[in-house]
Length: 378
Image 1 (cartoon, rainbow, N blue to C red):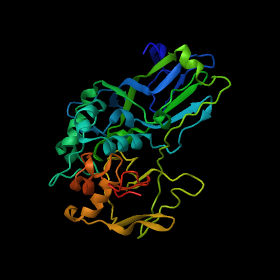
Image 2 (cartoon, rainbow, N blue to C red; image 1 turned 45 degrees about the vertical axis):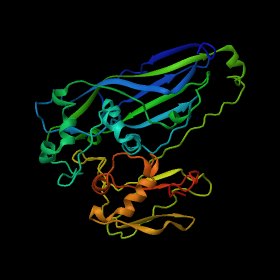
Image 3 (spheres, one colour; image 1 turned 90 degrees about the horizontal axis):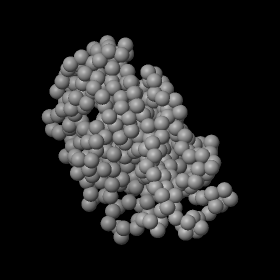
Image 4 (spheres, one colour; image 1 turned 180 degrees about the vertical axis):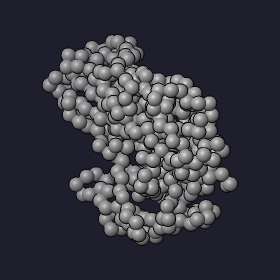
C-alpha cells in the first residue's frame, strides 16, 4: 500500500446549498478543482443523509396511518442524477434513476444478498406466492394485509428518522479507473415527486411530503506515489480515458386498441449494440400515481414477444406467455438464461410464480457467446 499510495483520504462533501423544505429542490455538489492534485475513486462514492415522511403541513404521521413506501426507498426520491465533467454533461437524460436502481438490485443481486446486504438499503420485497399476489393498485386492504407494504410502513411510522447510505447509480460509477486531478465533477440530484415513492389508497385525502434534512457525499480520494505518477499521463497535457457502461431508461406509450406493437430502433447501425435489454410493462400512470406501486410488473395482456435483430427473430419462434404460471416454462427459462446475474446456474430469487405475477420482464442478453454454449445467448 505504501508503495502505491502517498496518501489517502475519505472526504465528506456537502451540497452547494443545504437541503431545505422544498420537494422540488435540486441538490448540487462539486468535487475537485483545477489545482486539486488528488485522484478520486468513484467506486467508493456514497450518498449519506436523513429524511422523514410527514404531512404536507409538517406534522408527524399518526400511529398506524395507512401509508407505506416503495422498495429501496431512499434512492427512489431522486428521479435524475445529472453528471458533468469540467462542465461537459456525460449523463443520460432518461430520467429513470430510481427505476434503474431498483431493477439493478432486484434482478441482479442474489437471493442471499437480498436477505442480508440489501436490508441496509430498506429492501423489503412485496410478498408474492400462491394465494398472495402483490398488486400494482394500492388499497386500504393491501396496506393492512400485504406483508411487504406493512414491513416498509414500519420504516416511516410516526415520521421517525430514516437514515440512509447508498451508492448512486449514474453511469460514471461503472468506470474502473480513478478520476484524475484537474477534473471537476459536478453532480445534480433532482427530486422525484412524492407520488412515486409513497404509497397510499385513493380513499386517503391526506397530503404528504418527504422532508430531506441532511444529504452529503462521501468519497475516497488519494495521491499516488511519485513512481506511479511518473508513469501516468500529465493531468494538464495528457489524455485520460474513462470507459464506463451506459445504462439508459426509455418510455414508450402504447395507445389503446393496439394488438401488436414494435418498439422502434432500440439501437441502430450508428451505435454499438447494447449488451443487455430489459422491457417492462407499465400502466400509463404507474410512476405518477400515489395509489400504484411502480415496482410491480405484470404482462398486461402480452401473450407473445420476441426481439428483431437485423429483421431476424430472437429466439426464432416467439415466446408465448400463459396465464397459468406452470405453463410458462419456456418464457421463464428464457428469462433465466438472459438475466443480468449469470444464467441458469445462479438465482436472483425470482421464481416462476413471481416472474408471472410480480417481476415479469422481457430480457435479452446480446453479449457474444464466450461460455462454450453453456447459456443460450447470442
